[in-house]
Length: 97
Image 1 (cartoon, one colour):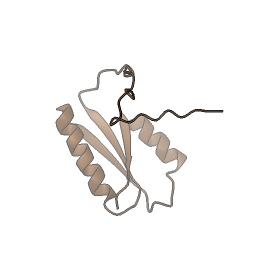
Image 2 (cartoon, one colour):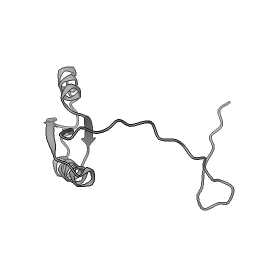
Image 3 (cartoon, one colour):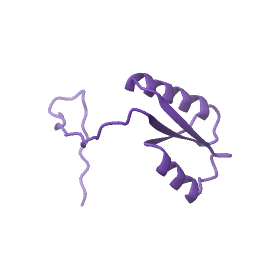
Image 4 (tube, one colour):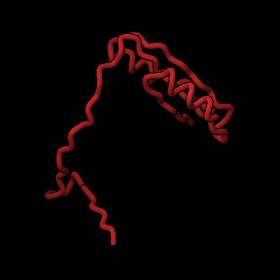
């Protein structure tokens, strides 16, 4: 039988253990941020704001590559996914309602 441990910050004795972050490499000077808008209302606006915030936070310029799905019901194709993975340093998909 599997046990589920629930951690509650408002109850004493439920402190979580520290976890080490995975090692990260240095980011390139010219980032390429991939964005996949899922076709929902305001997804483009949300992803654009996210990209702007990342540029400011990272303190560098970044090229933004946007892939727009026709609607939330359509997946991206394998070729589109492979192309985005080959071009972008990281990809963010987003929803907006």
